[in-house]
Length: 223
Ligand code: GRF
Image 1 (cartoon, rainbow, N blue to C red):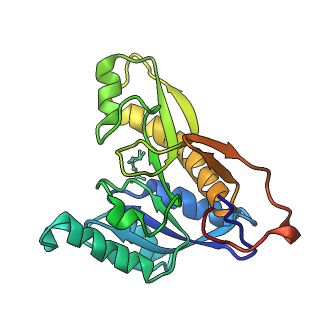
Image 2: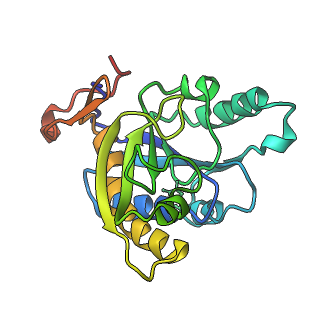
């Protein structure tokens, strides 16, 4: 990927739930000069997502497309893509977005959709990663940030960080500790994507050195 920009990359964030990862991203952008991105729209698949409230409090435009308001998934994805695209994002961030997206949506931002998942992939894909890690009795789980392809929790891995499972953990306690890690790791990876510092060769992602501030070439589509 050769995306680099002298102006901040435009970021769309999709949420379904509490949006604590959205908040962590907004906080990072606010406190890190040179982050290289700004959130221009927050989208959701439900109108009661707390992440929408966080976005509105930050003055960020929001869009909602509920699956049940459309005849099928294809129509829903087209509508979501249309609404998000109106804000011309360069990058799409899935921050606890609980629906699977196909090429109908993803083709709008090839190689520029990023997700955070609460396990050490490829272990425990899917919506119940924390519960399944506990049930399996693993001693280590964690956080994975990856680029999104059409398979669930499958695309090239950007970064991972381990979290120890404690004997007295339940799903909520373990997930909270994973989220604490995500809140640091995910914004870091979003920044790398925004600044064009990720090179993807097949499944292997390499982090490139930060561009010189004065030498940053304009943001372009990926190669
Ligand atoms: C995170 O743990 C993320 O990994 C998973 O959903 C959770 C979202 O949490 N995909 P929040 O809505 O950002 O608080």
